[in-house]
Image (cartoon, rainbow, N blue to C red; front, side, top):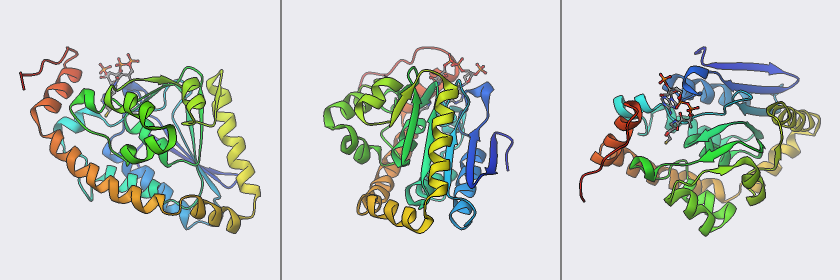
Length: 256
Ligand code: COA
């Protein structure tokens, strides 16, 4: 298990903390693998009743590690990111997210698979896929419009428009927004502890019923998005956008 993740089992709750502060918790292949493994293990562990995914009080995650985007094609079937996304899509124990600071790319799309999402007022949620020459992933092209409506989803996905945690809560992308990072973490823990006291069979069945139909479609759409994403990642627009980020310069695109 990588030291870029902290895994805690206590009080019947599995807490996964992304812990790579020097890269704003950018997700490496090892982190995806570790998160997927921990969540899958929790499914079979009757002593665990809920899963919290969090970053620090300053930063949730800056999304996929951009160096990995450039150096290793991360999206194909069998890859750690694919495995992680399938795992959260199919998880049958409640997933709860605590989001502070930036939640970029998969940092926002993973929230669409969570059952409860708590955010800081000033968290910044953004999915700059088009800005990077890429396309939506994690079934966000299906789940996001379903959750917040086409027009708002189009602003976020087509323009890459960032929204605050407060706006995310207003739009139904998060349950509640709080003034401080500590309050966000507390809200997630309180919800997890409440779940831990409830009858587990009933919790499990209720989650299955809420996700009925949606989960299967989301998994299918995730596969289609993944094929486009992998192909775009090799294209000139994405190569330029990603290199520009790493070289700390503005991208320039050839005339289409
Ligand atoms: N992958 C790899 N490295 C990343 C990263 C990512 N997704 N996000 C940030 N980093 C690195 C930066 O390159 C920088 O590294 P350096 O100190 O070696 O120069 C370090 O993390 C700190 O990032 P910085 O941009 O200086 O922090 P910030 O507080 O000014 O901004 C973000 C934070 C998250 C808004 C900004 O880093 C960002 O936009 N990151 C890219 C997000 C992205 O496009 N992700 C992919 C989505 S599909």
